[in-house]
Every structure is written in structure tokens, then in C-alpha cells.
Amino acid sequence: PPLAPSTQHCVRIFMVAVNPAPEFLEPPEGTTVQFSLASSTSFRIGGVNQNPYDTLTLTPNETLRFGQALSPPVATAGKVRATDVAPRVEAFATFEWTPGANYGAYEQDVCFVLSQRGGGGLPPFSSTRC
Image (cartoon, rainbow, N blue to C red; front, side, top):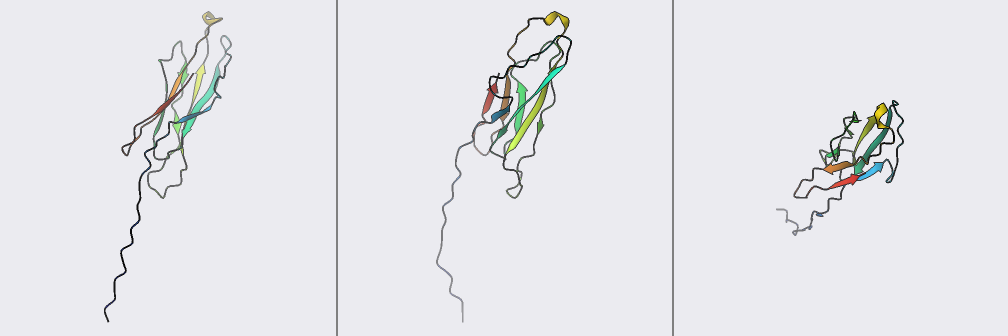
């Protein structure tokens, strides 16, 4: 006897068009780092994006000056396939500076930008931390 086909069963799926901006985790907002003349000081800066399919970049908002350096950002691997285990993607770097003797009483706000690439029809977003 021939088999009878089942009735059609449909499921509606949709993509939520929300791609939240990345968030800074370190250092806490409003942090002041004290530097001493001729002494190397550093701090870690970075953050996270809750969308594990995004690629993060961490850059200074302006060109660093006077021998200031930012290590190449280290990013965690995000998802490439849906089966990859990556609940989010992170990027961190280290800012380092050894102020010369002529920088006594010097003050500066150094700002950083944490950006995502976007993708899948979603616009990219960024966050800035000074």
C-alpha cells in the first residue's frame, strides 16, 4: 500500500535586526592612571561584543604621541559556524608609556575606540572610552 504524505507544517523564522555596540570592560570608566617621569607605566584596555560573529578592533581615537604605545590588540576568536563555542568576542591591548623628563605636570586624555565590523545587513557600531 502507498504511504500517505503528512500535512504541511510551517515555522516562521526571522532575524532580529539588532547589533549592539561593543562595551569597554577595562579600565573602568573615569579611571585616572598616574605616570612618573622616566618610569614605565602601563594599563590594559579592552572590551567585549555580545555578538560572537562580529570582529572587533581596538584603536586609539587619535595618533599616540611622545613615545606612547598600544600593543597589538589580542582578540578572542568569534564564531565562524553556528556550532562554534563562542558566547561573545573580546579585544584587549596594553597601553604603555615612559614619560621623559620634560613631561612634568603633563596631562592628557587618551581616548580609544572599540569597533565592530557589522555584517549580515546590520550596520557596524563603535564605543569610545577616554
